Length: 273
Length: 141
Ligand SMILES: Nc1ncnc2c1ncn2[C@@H]1O[C@H](COP(=O)(O)OP(=O)(O)O)[C@@H](O)[C@H]1O
Ligand SMILES: [Mg+2]
Image 1 (tube, rainbow over the protein chains, first blue to last red):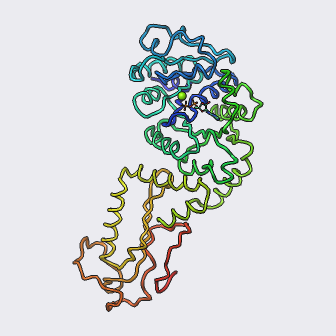
Image 2: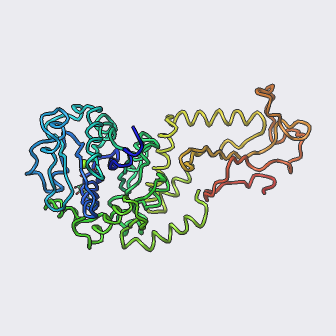
Image 3: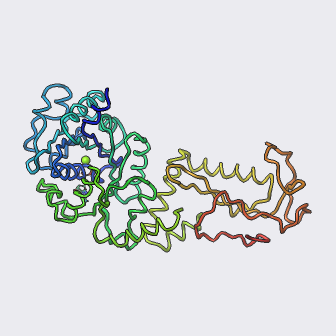
């Protein structure tokens, strides 16, 4: 197809990690909120079929009447299944099926669905399930780019490394480091940003602190990105700006700013080995 | 290697431990080799090099390191003496399998003077501070 068509389409970005519980769903909800608040039209797809979560994080669970598989299996129209967000204009959710298996999704249909969403939205964010099996493959199938979420833990970094290997260059994966605790890093008790990315060596979109408020916002179904003045909310907005191609610095948790910049400085000063 | 790990585990915070574990686990992930295979590769490597020079088997270090998106093998093999120098001290690389010769001991007559012994074979310099003993070498660079 002509290249101009491709250029007119929105971007389909899969949010993935390999490991579970590192913050893919939280990241998808907050990044989607931040992108939509910049004025973009954003569709979120919960591709974690069987373990629906994204609706809860967004506070939309009571509004979901149709889900991804209903659309893929043509029991529902896309318009009926897309749930408008209650806090943010231009943000829509396509929820996962709760009582189904990941394997119920047909890869080709998923691709076609993402493609049709790209005709209508500026961004399609796909919240991938954990693992590297079919569920992951289906989540990735329609995507044109990837964001990998990693916590500063050995297992998470290892899994991201594996996922990035599986993704290859086509998805140009970019990294978000989640749940960093600057105090622990300073005490030498947690892997630092440069420890993690010294190994992964991916373009860094930003770093999100381990943020107790996220529990509260998830309880309420109000993503933290709604509060752009909070430091973590602001970090999500900075990440959104970077995703949108703006030349802003990758956000890092405030307490760790000095030390991280110092260390990044020394990283560039001397050849790393 | 073990010494290095011990020092890491003993002295630094757990992030250093995490980092080293991560390095090792990724090394095997990328090689898709079992640790035993790495050991056996190390043995073969030593066998091969021992045909040419006498190496300090106790102090051999083989590591894998990621450089950008590739993996490099870094071998540090201290040389105790030259076993089989030819005319100008160089060993012909083209010879795939030289006639096996009796391994010359340190006291065995050697054609090359000890002072010309090369420093440890370093495929690439590591800046790690592990106590790499080059002390037994007659001369170090
Ligand atoms: N930056 C953060 N700070 C604190 N808790 C977080 C953060 N990110 C995620 N969490 C929490 O971690 C848990 C797992 O997050 P989730 O987004 O569901 O991960 P995944 O989708 O990768 O399984 C949730 O309870 C979530 O509230
Ligand atoms: Mg999830």
